Image (cartoon, rainbow, N blue to C red; front, side, top):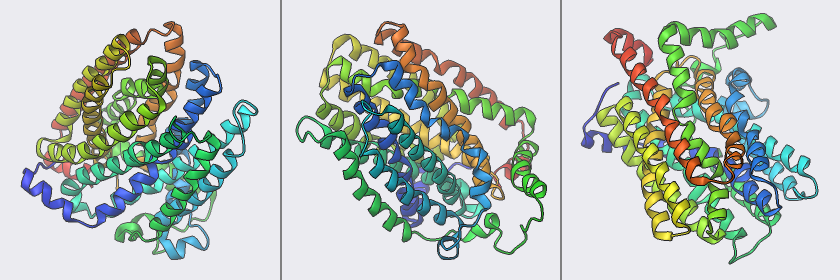
Length: 450
């Protein structure tokens, strides 16, 4: 990976294509408010246990398996939408409209009366969100030419991260919690209905984004991807993307990369899954959570994302990930201090300043890392594979966090110490992956970035 000076890095931000990346990052993050933030507090208010809340959050497992239908999203052209909007945006717009429908339906239910219906609708939101993620991630890579990747991708990752956290926390999440907080006091069904307006705006903005010029490489607009049988389709669009990844990277590096994606951010995910429950139990109000954790913390993440991109382009992604991993582990210990001290706002702000900086730093480096190993021929499928494996740790494995804290009899201090120790395996794997990458010749490194 090429490194740039800070002055060269800042020049990259003038590219207007980053606005589309920022918007689609917001679109990726906002559904987590719907099946995560609001639903978690709604379930807690309805009297459900930590374990139940944790296991219901396992609906986010769909983000870990969306690679299974990524070949369809990569290649299947949607009637009516495809000719007008292209391969990527047509899928994004379709999913956006269907998510808006699910928001309306979930606002007509109640977990205390019909937990199954609420869970199924939240699951559908997660499925549609995971589906649009396939196209959004491919769009972010396809919108830049191959020769621009080293200079543009860290900033594309920063804009994606900034948009994601704006959608999930300081705009989407903070707005939802402000509406449902003590001051305004909306019911959670009314909060969901209020979110529909934001979605309609997002759909309109998505219609205005530019179409990637390189989309022809993956959408097969020249007609070269016509398939005459199911088996031929399966080989071309399912087997070949995975075969190409392992052949290009080599078995040892490829397997090491996939293992790293699973474990690197597991401790952060375990903490994040139970953070809202922790804040309520330790004594913070919903208004305080909405302002400090969602608005203030999310805003800091957005700002830090740009700084993270500058550092990663200057020093390289591997070094950036290593520093971020160590710092995230240390930040987790500050949550243990909050568990001991109680609802101290100043301590919470300090913790969020440190934690969100290194979360943003790690997220930017992680997206750049995955994009670096993604083929431009099988963009959607390969990125979905690697992002899904990463999400397996952040969603499926982290879903047991509620069970862990219940097993510890609510001892949050021990819980946060455990999340700190979870960083160690990821750091060891990161050193190994960095060593494997150094062993490749310059020609091989050039091939990997293509």
